[in-house]
Image 1: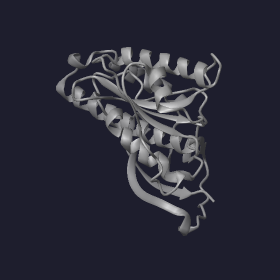
Image 2: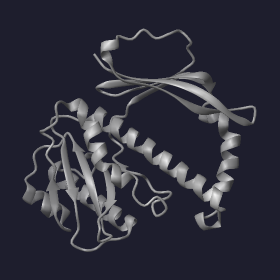
Image 3: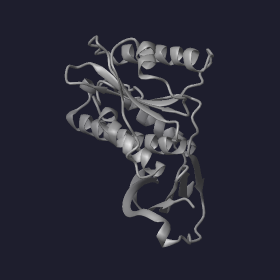
Image 4: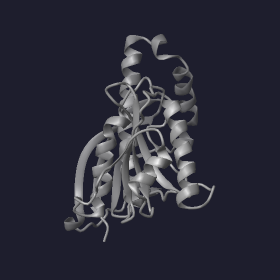
Length: 256
């Protein structure tokens, strides 16, 4: 159980304070198993009410994925970050097919740029469908040396690569918000088609935000000038086999 959650990235810290303690995932195993048994049915097998619930839950998970992506970008963004868009000449409509082609590109990049077969490239990317139905990808590569556009085209070998300039940002703290907003359409794209798929792709060698879940009822003392955002809202908590309202206080604070 915890009543305070803290997530820290390079530039900011987010704090959630709950009126009633929230169970951890381990404490919800039995309930999660019951929910999982319902999820085994296909979308078409659900009632209309269940379909609406499924879609609402999927949209919620995609919003959460956008926030996770924003934190990952903020944690890894540096002055050697490149933002690219990869497209294909061929009309590739299958998500898994495009993903396989992208992984081949990563292998070529590692071998050509870093002179290794190991997974050294640090990246995160989001697939999005074009009007013609073909997938393309918005890609962030972190801590990479300069690679000429012609070389990138050779390594990709499937179509065009557009370089998206990030030099108009006020500071690196805005990078996560700017880029994740750019990728937002892809994260929410094709809910049913991409059900069970990752909302975005990322390499395993990225730094991840630091997350803590605590039980601490002492009030926090925060300099008001450091607060970037604060909100009050109501969530739900599962208590005694039912959901009850759980008021939440949220603050986003710039790190010193």
